[in-house]
Image 1 (cartoon, rainbow, N blue to C red):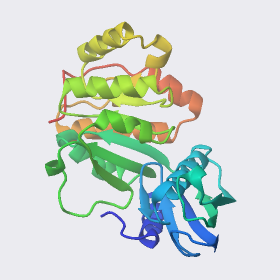
Image 2 (spheres, helix red, strand yellow):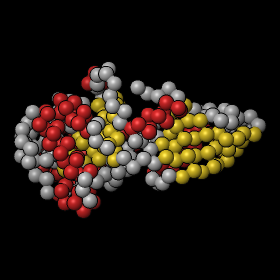
Image 3 (cartoon, rainbow, N blue to C red):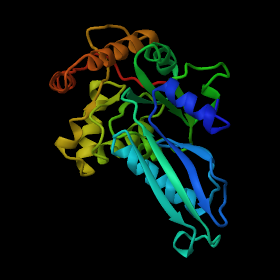
Image 4 (cartoon, rainbow, N blue to C red):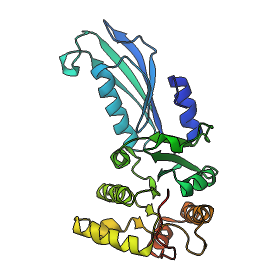
Amino acid sequence: MRAASWVEALSQCEQRGESYVLLTVISIAGSTPREAGAKMVITGDSTYDTIGGGHLEHTATAQARALLASNQQCQQIESFPLSARLGQCCGGAAKLLFEVRVNHTQHITVFGAGHVAQALIPVLAQLPLQISWIDSRASMFTSQPYPPNVKIIVDDDPPGLIRTLPAASWLLILTHNHQLDYDIVETALRHHQFDFVGMIGSDTKARRFTTRLANRGISRAQQRALVSPVGDTRIPGKRPIEVAISISAQIISRLHSTPDAVTKHSATVSASKEEQHDT
């Protein structure tokens, strides 16, 4: 459930292990959109509550996300004159406190809510992970409450969400559509910021995608992040739960690996499963 206030958002972010900025109006002069003490919470892809909207809030939100991108916990005070420079004519001024809370829980993004994902999410949710679960079909998500570290996102353009993800997020691509899989993979690899892009499928699908990616200008170096078929191939079986356990095993290995071991492990993954996509 989406938080209705900054207080609820703060609690949810802490439960999910999600980094955020608590933004507070600490003083005002003259006419301003909100009073001193007004607060809002800003994450990499969402905002909760408001300090009055308009260009002040827009500018402050952009600055908060820049601070989040630095991955450094800090506090910062900035003064904002509400003049033509901010597109506001209140004539007053606001002093804002940015409190950056960085949670180092590994973020993982799961694209697709089909059978494999439905079996996978309950397992991943028990690990020290912050999970974003994305699908364009709202009907794929039940009304039951999900664990606090699982964030449900329904969006008609999943590839378009790539730019909103944390830079170090791991990606799992388990959608019901091969073209959608490809669009997500290409978009992710072009961003140069993800070191693990796991995709469900067969050796044949992986070869076709790598050829197509090369033809689209994605270099071999960029393609190193792509792990397909995703999963620990020592675990056999094609049932959704078997594939989910295979993927979970690979994720657990990554969580316990050094950076060098992670790179080696990803590079040596080989395929043994037939052509798959998650319905």
